[in-house]
Image (tube, rainbow, N blue to C red):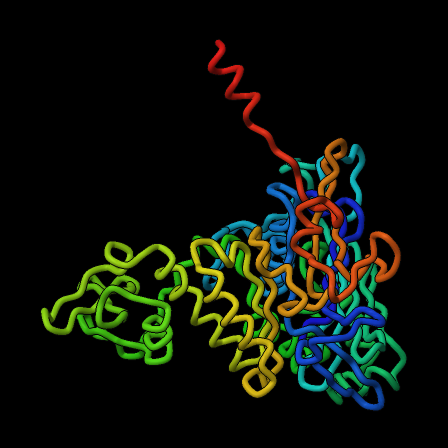
Length: 433
């Protein structure tokens, strides 16, 4: 369960951006949207969903891009990888891009806080990336910290610093407790400025179990997809045979509910043995054609996204989607959101985060105020800022109450994160010329 993600000096976010999935104080209503987890004697709460609003080029995608880049760094274990082999990823390079306003190198920061297997894990990372578009700059890791259940395990800057033995002995191997000085010396001598200590020294010398728990959560339970409108799932099929149709029942039934123009949708491996492709199946004709040539673009998009929703539900994962609603009818999206909000179905505490331009979700009956997020860009500095609807007061002239018409207020500019555009003058000049 994701509780919080932070970044600083990343793309349009120069100042620290805190994306919180924890309920805001004094918020009530839609209690099914709040998960409760107890670790020891402490209770933790998390929101099951969040929707992000803002005009084009405001920085909505940059939040998701920061999450995706941070995930890639952790899974690769370094900050220099040019190519990745992550599934369902549309980019092949780290988008390690500091803000373009700076004249002197300033650290770029990322941090994440999540709960997994009764552990509250927080991992922080600070990088020296140089200036905007300086490809020749020698990037390096400035700082790293891993904390578990609000106790720091280690910090890394020029040297490695471990917590006291009482805190760390729960999470490291017995060999470490017996040979603390030797292990620290080995780790220090093998510290590389571009490699994460978490996935190298800490994993190999001190606690492979805890490091693997962080990596497994990142790989299987932090599903971040930038440009979801370009997403194409190549369904893996065990012992697949060329020209044999494989139909995944749950996905196919969802496709029928969504609306398809064929009898079924299935995956076929071509004769040349390349990756499986989605096909429309016609039983009476005993034929199949590529779904992209026969089904609507919205249908293909929905089917490419649906396996990720299934994975999130089964594994209790965080599903973060950029352009989730592109070409998909709002009622289909509402139905998916309702699944995440259903306590009887969402028993594994899956979370859904997406950005949108569709105002239909600005509704107190769909999302809590702390689940509605905004991103605004300053027209002079071009810097992005992020805030929630719950940051507005509930009283006074501009107060936001549960009975407020969120959509109407948004379009008249009461919440910001909207831009007035009038193209008529441009066309008027064009016609006159």
